[in-house]
Image (cartoon, rainbow, N blue to C red; front, side):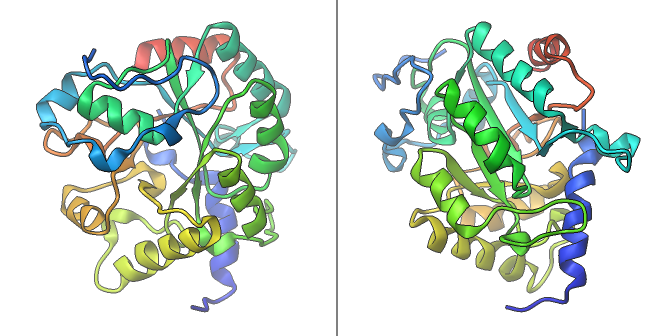
Length: 287
């Protein structure tokens, strides 16, 4: 599938502005270790029975952070763009705050089991997600998370894989596979970040089917999780995601759908303007 070069430039620009529209207890026998390391590969989610929406909505929400670029600000970065660019030292300090506060990272399989069956989670669970395939998520984020035994979820926009953009460079297929092989989770984030609410006709194939298949070929694993571009979703599109076998889909900070909470899981953007203390307070106030 070939696309005009302007798609790549558009994707690069979207990295700066993506998601800005919404910036803002169980008894199951499953036991997930309380270490900081990933244990989700011990969960067979195919055996997890989907719970009623009411049950899922009644469970305590797990804090989920959404990051984009992690690099130092440039003179060319605008005020809005800086909201989605966390400077390197600030990111290190934010992660250190999470570690010192006793947070343990979890991955989507663990969240899926918890929401549906009440499976046990580590103390103070948190999920770290990274959108848009930015190269600094591999070169900067990866070693910082590894230092503390943390894992992350990387939602990949496939148009930009291996590309060098005007504003940002992107991860290669080999780097994406390495993240997956190291126990992180790779999720689908469409082909070129087109607004999910506007999908019609061949959009489902171009934006969902082909990108997801490509990610499965890269990782050698089934892609079970999806993140909406800009955090925007509509109820009409959820059946299309279910039809394609997705287990959960992640939005941003709007209210979860009362009928399909698994497909409107909330996240908050970790702003580039936030200090570790501000982030800590935002986590407590948002979930």
